[in-house]
Image 1 (cartoon, rainbow, N blue to C red):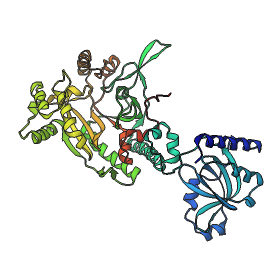
Image 2 (image 1 turned 180 degrees about the vertical axis):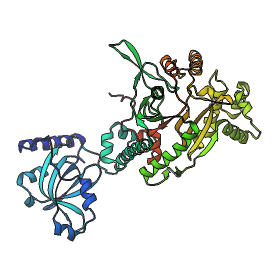
Image 3 (image 1 turned 135 degrees about the horizontal axis):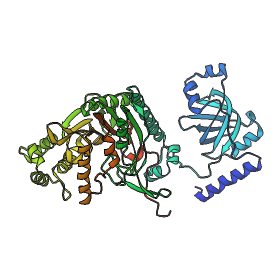
Image 4 (image 1 turned 30 degrees about the horizontal axis):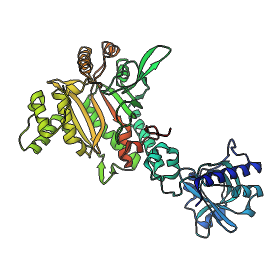
Length: 501
């Protein structure tokens, strides 16, 4: 088995030999008439006799995945990333220079081929080559096995290599593209306007999260990479845009896990004169339609489970769900009143073995207990609604319960998929909530919401009643493609720096 340095040397020697033949090593273009995928789709099922009778001429190109020689008969396998096709090479069927080029090719090189379609004696759909054009040299040897990279870290760090050798990788990202298109189709059909809002902001708002901090030199201004577009999208509601959405990046300076990447993609949409109950119904319809368009049906396989996106989804109130599961585990009745008192809520969490941070109020305790007791078990799509006000600084309170807001989160696959609420549009109450968050920040809560005076000022011009929602695109694609790490659905996920870099 040749050593890697010998393989590298041989590839460079082949490139030098091509140059000595006068071959353009990096031509500017290749005028193909067909893609490999197009040929396979249009003609791959045609019978041998049909191909012989019509003699279909073609010019195509791609990367070489295999080279085989059997005496005078030589074969290439060519790929355009979507499909593969065999190419038949004979010295007496092409110009002498072209055959010399063939003898200097390596796995991974890009070539253009002209010829006609036929089937071999073994009935393999093939191009009989009459010409060969060199397009680019692969100087580094590709993995020997064409069944996908097994080294997960290399897959993420060198996604370009993963796309070359792992057949399923491209399909995941094609599904991601279809997911985005299906969401846009759904919202556009309902009169929504797609917009773009700032990704560098003077106030990191719209969510409870740690921001990335940067500095604009010319303006001598501290800026934050946005943690959410929410407050800018709601400014558009103030301005009279009644239905808006944005699909773009958010950035949160937090941990990395199978469900978290510091840079991730969100859909956020806002609808005037609506509320969280209407958005629940709309979300069911949207995800059902997206699943059908991306996977062909409403049921998707996720690990060993079949997840159904068929409406209606299950619905649980947060406090009700906590009481139900706590009662089951403790063997006694648990009431919502216990969750509304900080002392009894803290005692209950201790009985359930839920760890709490100092200074948490009853609302935060309730949310922490819920996450511990329920989140991982919510595999089928489930709306959890009516959150404590304490963990929802931008949500509208229920008319008859100031400690509860009209908010829901959608869970599926054991993790949060969406977050929505009836939007708080009372500027005085919004200011009070921001001031309360500032107190939390002073106590050491780095994720507490900052004061945004301009947003409060905007609300003073009047914002109509509205519902708003954010959907995690990466997590949705995970479910639709049976991917179990967020890094599998992000082309270039953030990775720790190499020790040797």
